[in-house]
Image 1 (cartoon, rainbow, N blue to C red):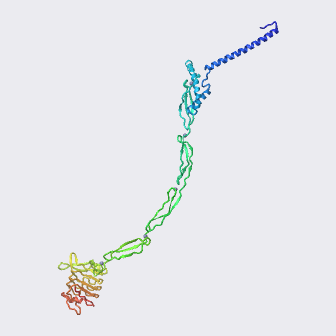
Image 2 (image 1 turned 90 degrees about the horizontal axis):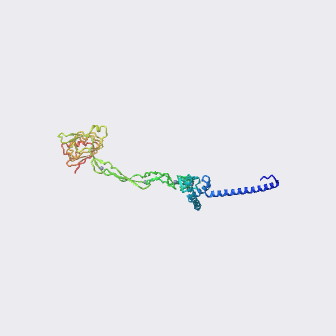
Image 3 (image 1 turned 90 degrees about the vertical axis):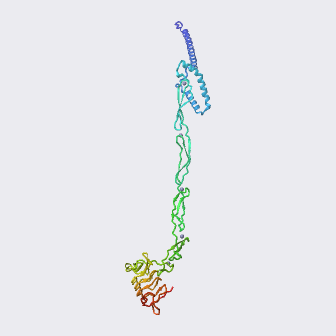
Length: 436
Ligand SMILES: [Zn+2]
Ligand SMILES: [Zn+2]
Ligand SMILES: [Zn+2]
Ligand SMILES: [Zn+2]
Ligand SMILES: [Zn+2]
């Protein structure tokens, strides 16, 4: 093309040639671009350039979200999207499987994830996890399951009492125990004291001290203690019935506060013995102790020999001496010589039936002796039996046949020596002659 003969023509020609080459190059480039584009399109639709999961996470993310929502069952309206996706995948799946058999490269799998398998359940305290497995290539995808909500349970309010604090209502999770609404303490109210009035004790009822209790809960704050009954205030005793030597008496007394009466017995009084006989009830006085006795000569009975020396010597004579009718199982028959000689404190001698003899000076110088009664059984009074009894006024004889040897009266006294008897009464004496 390089023409050395005509420079202009060559130049012109060369200019037209360059233009023509440029157009051709442009056309060629355009054609190449079109071919490439066409090839690229064909490659795209044939799936040659289908991205691997790792290369293109964006569609997976969409699928994950969609699947997750399906699992929760929250957004059912998004399901059709997934269905479309699945259908698309199905359409490609056959092709992909075919490819796999031919060419087992997983990087070209479009993934079809089945149902999730929960590997760790979520709770109200921690997230869980679930795993999806691609049904085509077995690729696994792990997903976090969000924490569940707490299971709220009401903690009921508790009223405060006098002694224990209360609580406001609150709540907590029954699963993990997390306090959701804290219960606040309500302070105890304290007792409300009310006075329990006591009462004074009387002689008929016990009393009580003041106390107190809580009007709200009833608890006793200060216990009432019992006051013992008072003693009755009795008036002076009044004798209802006098005691005698044979029966008890009775007294009564009245409480000046309540009117209650009490009564008691008055013990029997002593007999009023005169000459050995109670003037009230007629009881015979018991034999005087400390008398001494000797057997009679014939041993058929005893002779009373008077009081023991050891008894009468240091003591005053008893006012009355009672001589027993029997001693040691045998009758007392005589009062011995000088038996009560000088017992001048004795006022009364009781001489029982059975006594037959009063020996000489038996009662000599008994200066307190005023009267004496002699038994029917008496047969002999020896001389000087009553010698020196300066106050003796009366001798009572209880049987006939006795005569007083006194001025104007005839003797004898029946027995062997009536004079001796008469001689006894030399002082002024009023003698009685007793006739039954
Ligand atoms: Zn897969
Ligand atoms: Zn919880
Ligand atoms: Zn209380
Ligand atoms: Zn009373
Ligand atoms: Zn009596």
